[in-house]
Each structure stands twice: as C-alpha cells, then as structure tokens.
Image (cartoon, rainbow, N blue to C red; front, side, top):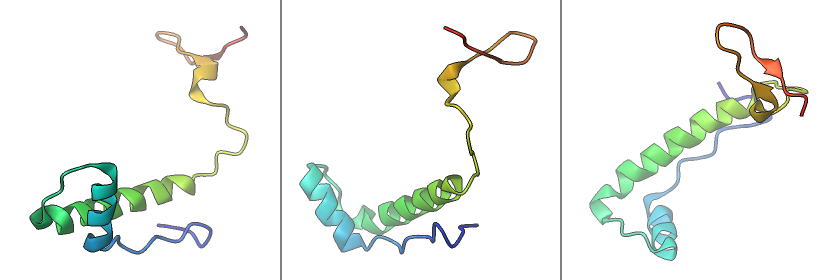
Length: 77
C-alpha cells in the first residue's frame, strides 16, 4: 500500500502514452494503448511500494559476497 510520502501516480492516459511511444520511436498500435497504459500503471504501483521499504543504512548488494551453505559476508576489498 503506498504511503503518503509516495502516493500512487494517476494512470497514464493512452493518448499521452501514444505521444511518448512516438517520441521514443516505438511502434505502438492504437488497439494496444489501453492495455499498455494499464501495465505501465501496474508497474509504477509496484515500484511505488518498493520505494516505501525502509532500508536505512543498508549497503548495496555488491558489497556482500555469498558464501555457499552459510550467511553472506561483507567484502573487505
């Protein structure tokens, strides 16, 4: 569920999506606009919920080394 800090964006209107697709040089038939707009909105909603995860000082994943059969360890070099 989106927080007040990251409210959900309104759905992208199909005509705006068509404009963006043309500018990007992507062929997007008009009969697919509504479906693609709904998919873009669904993806944005999921990404919005990920923005709300409190990571704090969590370092990026490349700073860890996976150890088979054990717990990950922090890289030192």
